[in-house]
Image 1 (tube, helix red, strand yellow):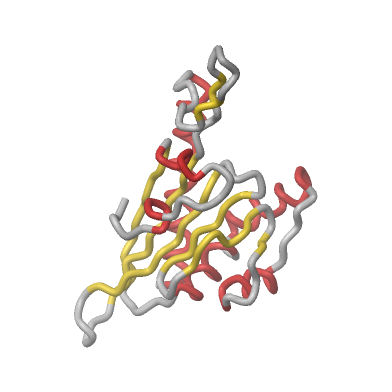
Image 2 (cartoon, helix red, strand yellow):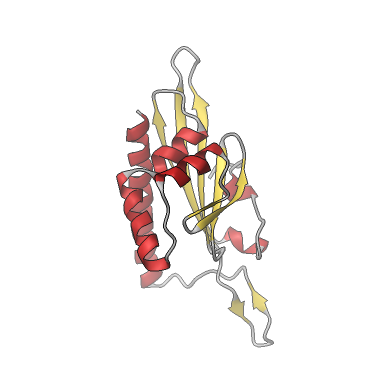
Length: 174
């Protein structure tokens, strides 16, 4: 995870101390200059993510459209499907789910020379720690989820899915 990543540095929300639990970062480089708006559009309208959007619409009754993706990309929309914009810069966007349990982060970084521009595309996710109860009734939001078999299986799926999502966006931008 890059030091300047909003996924690493942003601690806003209801439980700012809970975000040191799990974070990941995947990257791909494309052989052209890419803006954050282009990455947002390519990522959230890829065939794989369209399937996720359909699932969110069916299970959570949180539909989304390509027009909403365009508005999110342009910076004129703060909510999209199950997420809201937590923070945004010219090169990064951080989205938090409606329950503030997960975060999604996209970033673009120019690399190479201006005569042969390339862009590093990055996608990361964060999972908030579940609050653990103490015998005195207090809660510690820094306690992590138990790394049991279900959690490990879910994380293995998440990593494969995240890589596939970023690769699909990278292909659309190449």
